[in-house]
Length: 245
Image (cartoon, rainbow, N blue to C red; front, side):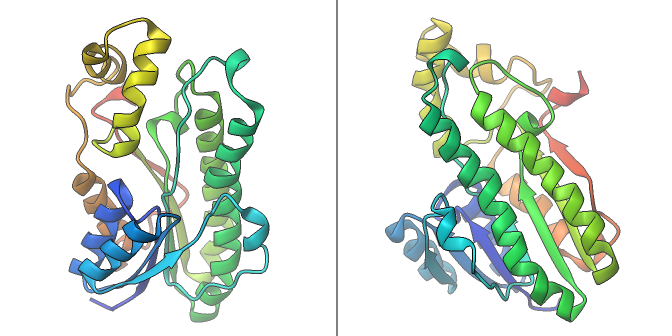
């Protein structure tokens, strides 16, 4: 397999860490981007990669960025759970900067290199919430829906240059991001914390378990490969049957 340079945002934990580790197993060179310096350096050190400590919510600092990566994995994200009328406007803006504006700027920075070599992969870690809505997650849901559109336009523009762009749409994954939601979900829905996973997170899923980060990484591994050259402009749900309904 050809060695490629893979940039993974939010690579210091959760899905991003799993993708970084799988990419190294597949023979790639990996850049671990995260605002948490200790996490980025820990993962990069473990896998023999490179750490890039960066706050991707500071989008003004990304406007003149140039990236020489062959595969870009837009994964970094945060969550806020609250009714629309209670959500702080700054939280809405921060989520959109981090999860929609920064992917645009990173794609913009990476495409010239990908175009010049006639090959590239853009993999956007979206969500079942990029395809469906849920109450109390207006910033996250709207950012993920925007990411879906960004990915499709990238696919259309990148096609003549050998660049593909796809979304991966997991349901609830066993990550710190999901675990941190449990208290907020319990409070918002008025139920005990120990009932949140079954009654809120998995209520729409036919397969009643959380997804493991390594399962998401396995799908990204295929999407990075030469075999995925005709896979572009699409969304790959891996949600236990949530979006089948």
